[in-house]
Image 1 (cartoon, rainbow, N blue to C red):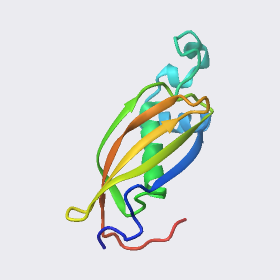
Image 2: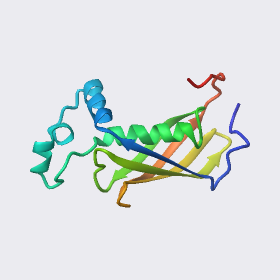
Image 3: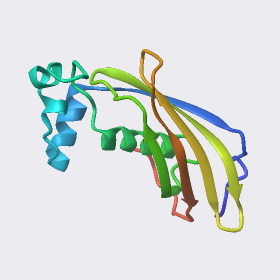
Amino acid sequence: MGISADLMVGQIATVARTISDADVALFALITGDHHPLHLDAHYAHATRFGQRIVPAALVSGIVEAALAATIPGKYAIICAQALAFAVPMLVEDTLTITITLMALDHATAHAHCGVVATRNDGAEVVRGTVTLQIEDLPDFEEN
């Protein structure tokens, strides 16, 4: 399969997703991360954050889903990522992820993307780069 001709350096995609209380609760159930900063509003209010925040790993997972849904798409898997978390993501806030296709390496079938994610107030939650391997996967139907 290799790199699709539809992929071009400079392409930009944007995905927005509100991270709900249910998302955070399910993440805690699946991972066992029951930190009160994520789950206990009373506890979180007493911290410098003043409210509950979303686990960074959940934010990272949503970034991965955005990459699969847009650029480079469902035929790519993450090889490496370097994400810096500048400010916390807040529960019940919307994360807006902007992906920029920065480079394509046809010899290795790698796509290199820049990622920036912001919350509703415009604060930059995440900035970084992701390298993805374009795989020769069989076609599949979306559910």
